[in-house]
Image 1 (cartoon, rainbow, N blue to C red):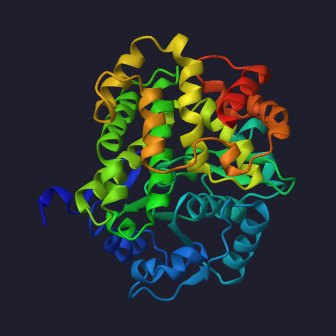
Image 2 (cartoon, helix red, strand yellow):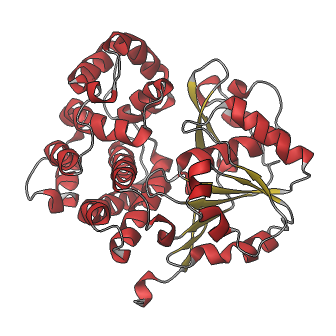
Length: 378
């Protein structure tokens, strides 16, 4: 195997082992964190795929919580937190896509922070209430999309059905083990949808008005990797180089979260309350949000066009993403997902209050969000 793709150690935001064989570092990392009985937070699909068995090979004892919903909920997190306490666990290993990884962060939070979870939500001023009194979390992503393994935020559906963001630097997993080998058997549709999620992260963090040149550079490089490799990863799922590049692009999108996200996520969070897939929503919304933001992006548009040149030389990024959506056979609009158009106003009102709305490059009102949703509906 080319040395370029072997596991390497990265320290940026958190400790990251990246590359083929990275998951084999789990035993040593558990030992370095003095974790003797971890709770494994995952979902049934990951268990069925044999990925928990692969990651936890020769590690004993551990407890298993595999009931993470496709959109993590406060109710499920409380059950997992109870199992953590009752089983005398001392750390968490999160294995899966964004849902198990976000769930693990919330479980760690609930173990030492009490009261309604909504009190810790970003829009409720919860960030300073979250302390470092958390059990250690090791994150092992099995998809290339969310970047949650290096992110300070978790998105969760509260007990009152609102989908809110809980965020703090203390929620960043202590270690991330990013092994592209765990994604080799990921279905084409999921590879495409999660890959588009990563693309949306890179685009939105780069376009955010927050001043952070290092994060902007990371986001732009991640976007270029994703644009050059996502189709190959979908069409040739066993292509190890393409899988490596797409996972790196996903990781870079997560590392760039320091700049904040934007209108795509401000909309996809409330849309997710209807059980719609997050990555697919981002894929549909991204071209429409780029069109809305275009008047204020200035030179950033040129940089985005250059980074996505593999999708079409000189083609505007929103056009490139719309064409990519079709080539990857993803749903082209919200109607195709079964979204009820009568809920547009409800979603728009929630988007205005979402924490991601604050860092969209162009201010957006509820009326603006309604217009974007109507264009994305079909």
